[in-house]
Length: 344
Image 1 (cartoon, rainbow, N blue to C red):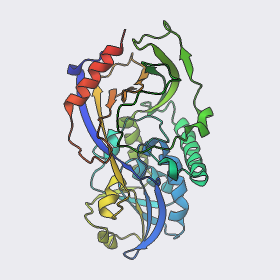
Image 2 (cartoon, one colour):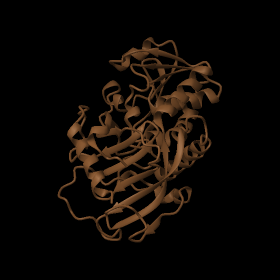
Image 3 (spheres, helix red, strand yellow):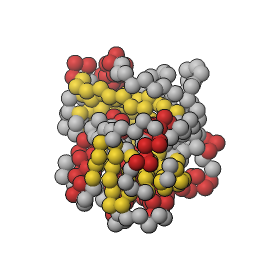
Image 4 (cartoon, helix red, strand yellow):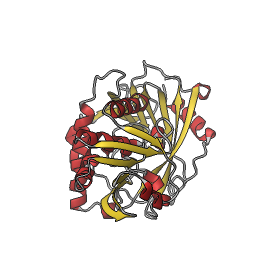
């Protein structure tokens, strides 16, 4: 891996739409329309998109309208549109931006179905069961895309390295602004090949402790184009529209509206429960020979191999409840230098 700051070619920032109680999937009558809310997936939007859209589908079908509107063209909006089309509906998407300008395009692009999705106290048994249904449904759909042209989905080896033994807790680094998130992935552990602990000499990294596992990676540039092409080929329409207030939905020609605005729902629909969690990614020039992902435990540092480059993600100390979308180039350059330091 050529982890050199002068090989950085792109930077992106997004605000994950985190809701402590999890995604909002419910219907209401609003401004003369039947509105189905479908947003608030934190860092799990791509991972859960198919299963979550299938949870929302009965609420959409309840009106028996054959023509529906979707607001938003990101991960949840596009996937919900495809699920609705497969159910026989005609769909028009209204959006201010479309891929690759949408915030979802800045995602890391890995299978992370419980990333910043619920706080621990909200992950009750019924909620956890619903999450499991969404995760399993989504996972099955992702597997059906393996081997398609452009490799929209791929399996890669991944390594998590650590300065201390994995059985030891991480050292206390002071107050943490983020809440305790629910960890649910053990409920679907068998979907991922088992974790292997490596001995010294069995891995090429300077960190003394390492484990290997299999990581599902989404090549978002290819995948978003696939979604868009499929949506348009099956009669979908896209109309550019900038919604400033919820009353504007009254002027839409469709009676059933699906709100997939993600973080935008905070201002548009007044959902004050949404908390922005800032995330910055950067891409190094593609290196096809680097076919593994790398995570540094306790350092909030990750590298993911994608077709559009080696994606480097670094968390800042104040990302929680931070809606700043300005790129901090120094943050990514420092992350790349730290990655270089891990290589033997």
